[in-house]
Image (tube, rainbow, N blue to C red):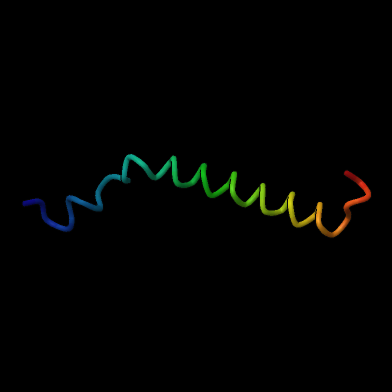
Length: 42
């Protein structure tokens, strides 16, 4: 069994995917919110 220090030494391999997904999700959220506020521009 690995110790807690070994687990936190290197980042989780999926962390890049989570970060990229969060950025894309935030971008879509901003776009949809803006489209709801100003629909005449779309």
